[in-house]
Image 1: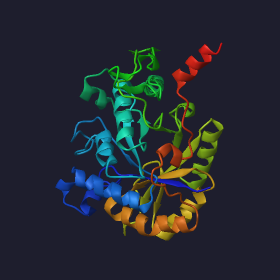
Image 2: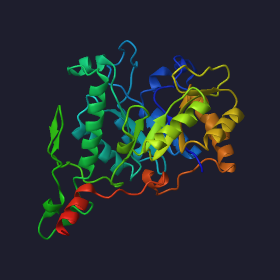
Image 3: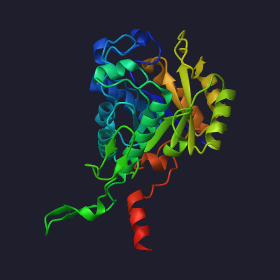
Image 4: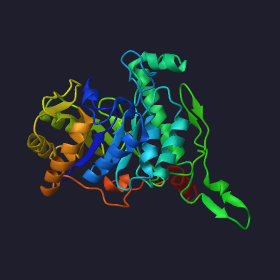
Length: 352
């Protein structure tokens, strides 16, 4: 088995003072060039995907980011300038409108030629509701319901166009075959969605959906992200996730490879030290998980070390998986193209 390696590229890194050690002036963080350079470096290194965290808290809010560009916009910006790396923005499931989420992510998949993904995350900070003028959702059962419904709606909307719905019949002036578009008729406890989508079915059919262990229903996602304080905890969490029906399991790992930089306390497995030690840890995890998402303490210090030493060592050992140009994120991860739900139901009805 070989690991798929992802990297989180939000901000300057997970360390609170990472900005002090950035390779650029503070005013360059929120520029397209900084985002593009980092994603390009991650792609050239051989990472399977880059993820982009997000928050609906207003800039400068207590505990919130000083500044941030929307995660989907960051992923879309670099889509046309990359060719192999998967692009995974975080989009909340608690307050975001799933119809818009579906459209944004489908568009990302088109822009990246099938390398889009989605990390579905709950918005647990009540200040997010205040920022949007929404009623707070805090009860665990309600957060779970909103996440479950949001993922279901987004996935159904991606299936609401058949793969061959776009016909471009110039002789008759028709762009789509209306019989190949479908209402999803979703009825939830707090909202309903009629459909169909306003964007054709994504190139992958369904983007790769990531969820978090202990929160997301494994049957709704393609990849479950697991955390633990030790490698043993990761192994146990991965086994439980697999037993619960998870297709793929990725470990969350904080890394600090810069001199004197401690890994932050986040509840994730953490490593601070030399590159050789990280290689050994990743080789240990290889027998338990399908991939690892790395959270660098200081992006501008840790990413070069990962690119120059860690990934090459793992590739030589046959532990890391390097994406192939022209592949979709689904095919890179070994996931089959899903059957369109509504077309399958229609064919089943017609065969009766």
